[in-house]
Image 1 (tube, rainbow, N blue to C red):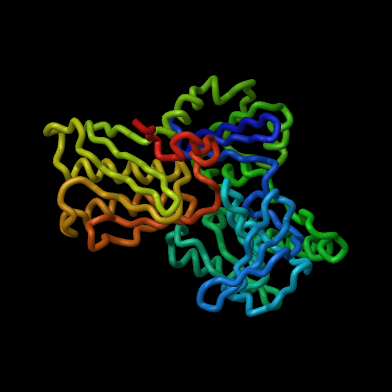
Image 2: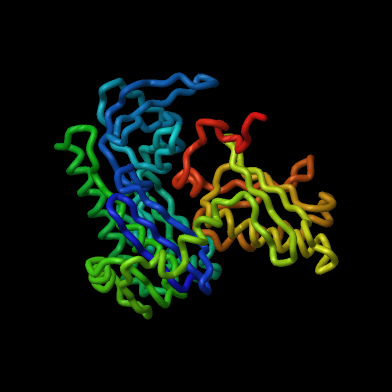
Length: 388
């Protein structure tokens, strides 16, 4: 459980560290010059793309340095045809990476503390993390009773801990936010920003409100904003260089290494490729401290932790040590699923492949830590090897 959040803003870069028992669990590095995930733009269509199987998409100028991509076959949005030069309201779902522009959608979502407002949907869903079926039903009843026309809602986990009046009030506030975006879009000239996602620090604080005890920032202004926005059981500290003072810079450097050592003496090796992330579990120096099963279960916990810390996403393939028979891998997969359930970014175990590898899919929203903090070597072209 996250007990400390560290916020440090310097120029156009912001770093947010989520800490548990002095260990770095998650790192958010934001380039404030890029279009952020969740922000809404009035974009201009620059080009129509012909894709495979008769599908097509569009390149959208959102003033992000590289055109964003819109899939025309976006689920639930119909088969609308657009022309080059036309303006369109879109929301960023994946931020721009070195070689690719951002990904955007037409189906807008407005994220609150307790709800997500989906004006282009017509159903009410709830987070499975709420747990209690009775509580989920009660929350859905409240939301459905206050639905206006055709609109969709997702009930977040935090909604289970607040009075129903707070939920109803947030429904009104999110609708007003959507109306503001629509009104602004009518008079704006593309490309332009219509809605900037709130400071991600506040989202991290809301997601970890139950366990949070301390927030450390590097400016008095941010301290004042937190105290104005939140009234929680945590203290706010100001440090000039919190990442350096808490030793987080060293932990970040470790997170860029390919090799991660396990307490038992085993190791895992992490390799990011353009197609997928490959992870290998090696018994290393393990000499009877535990069985291969123990090593793999320990590795499963570490892998889930590294996915969060390094923000690894997309297809992830893991080669655990020893036999790949399902009877041996079942408890390991259960540990992996349990640990992935703690991740705020949706991730799930697809299963055990015929080749004996465990396959994971994790939603991609932002570049990985390696992409953010490094670039491909022009000499070895990313292989990490040089010619003899």
